[in-house]
Image (cartoon, rainbow, N blue to C red; front, side, top):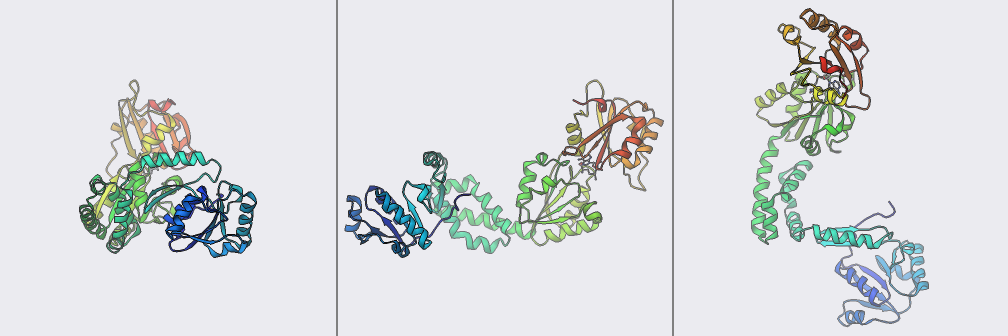
Length: 452
Ligand SMILES: C[S@@+](CC[C@H](N)C(=O)[O-])C[C@H]1O[C@@H](n2cnc3c(N)ncnc32)[C@H](O)[C@@H]1O
């Protein structure tokens, strides 16, 4: 970054302009718009500047420039056609650590004046750092066309209500969300655009009341993070992460997705492999409720989809019992994401008419697995958390009629750059599983031989 963009307050403060011709006049007017008291140093005065002098709108300070003059102003603009004088002014800026701009001479400038789109109090400054002023002007024209004229009054209204909003919405993220939603409401923008300021203000206060009620209660969003690749997170999931005060995440959630969490949000690792110890589900449930009851926007971020072997249902039951409002944002489950990344279709006209997703990690007291059903022909079986039980799965499937030569694929770390796919037959399942990196998904069925 060659320049630091800042907006300086010049109201009632002195600004010095060297020169009093046409170019100087334009700069003087700009400084006056910003409320500066403009002092002019020049030998000769042009007509426009003379008119300002006649009305006492600027001061003709004296006629000879002295380097120490730059100390009399917040900033100085040299707008003369005398190259030597311009250089002297620039040198004075360096000597006295004052900001000097020399019009149309970027090399001598210690600050530059950007192209401005003015919808005060909204202002957009565009600069190419003196590299291509015409480009900056073109950009300004484009932005001018894009930005509605009601931006100024809308920002003024927002400024007026800021203290009230701050009082009623204690957290930064609640306030951010409130403003984002308000500025997106066509009713609000139409009212402001039509100059119906009172009605717009009424609409704002109604919305604020509703937001305050919602905030007091807190809100939990269960977000499915997808199988690993952050590009597979949904837009809704991303928005929830950006609005969150606190995010409780699983070990399966990829680093890329974690990087999309709003920077100021608190992060809590609750996953099985987090810090090599697992936070029991009950504790996680309590934590979610605890944060929500503080009126925070909580995101429970889980690998894949929360409702596919994700225990999302249990968490929802807890939220319902505590009377906490919630939403569920689905994610791409591993069976869809990892197989797609490995080029394996789950169904295929010739090979598989159905898909069954099962967990290999059954409850100890669990019901008997219906192996005959899982061993069906023309069916793709996707096993989550099954590598440890690969031998048992293989034996049972073969016992229930699945040919030992049935193709299988084990996808490890699916969708991530480290993804690997090991292929073989059902007969080899145990051996393939033993070598697979976690997390791993087993795909059993004719489609496993495909790599589209
Ligand atoms: C507790 S389950 C969670 C499943 C998750 N809710 C989903 O919808 O994908 C964990 C299992 O999902 C599978 N899994 C999750 N992400 C995976 C990935 N990127 N590659 C392969 N398998 C994955 C593995 O079988 C892992 O043991």
